Length: 274
Image 1: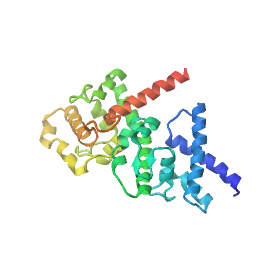
Image 2: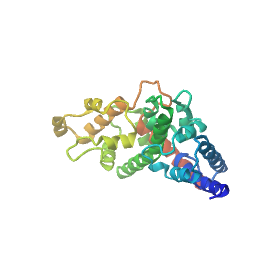
Image 3: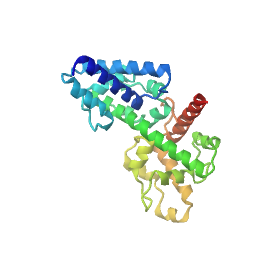
Image 4: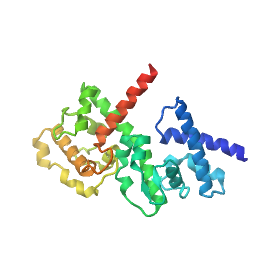
């Protein structure tokens, strides 16, 4: 493969990568400029990591979303740095820039992962960028399920927005139970499927064992309304593992940030279509 052919492959990969990683309307001129910019970033980063097997490295980048470890050493650090999301010298994430570029829901999903300092800046960049990739996929899934539940329970979007205030008592009875059932948050005996919670809301701040303080007793499960105790558990887990003391920018509950961002995006898309 000559350089010109390789460049064309880079462009195709860049387009696919941008669709995966950058949230923008594909029909806008600004989006086309983003694609051009990200194509150049990919080229620069492949040069920076000193790849000798260009074709082989391009093939690895093409399956980036399936990486379980970084297959092109330090590639993601270069990529995140060029996007101004990551300071390689300080090994620190620029959270405000991530929120500005990708949305508050993406930031909220990964905020604790982006705070788990690692002196190995290449590894830290990889784990953070992988989390953001997961956020793009899973926040959309959470939103689709909560909207489906709202439709089933005849809940208006205005009522749904009340979750942004993070009330102690559920403002829409049984809405969270519906979400929990759709996303398999519980086993048949009502133990937690914590992997599914993390997939829906993002990495937790606390160690998983610390979350046990939020578990309702088996006796209470038998005597209390299921919708009530399920929301109580969610509320406790949210406060313990996600909701913070105000020290984070763009602080919000995980669920409300997803609802707000995806709803706004949906309205914007409908406006453009009309």
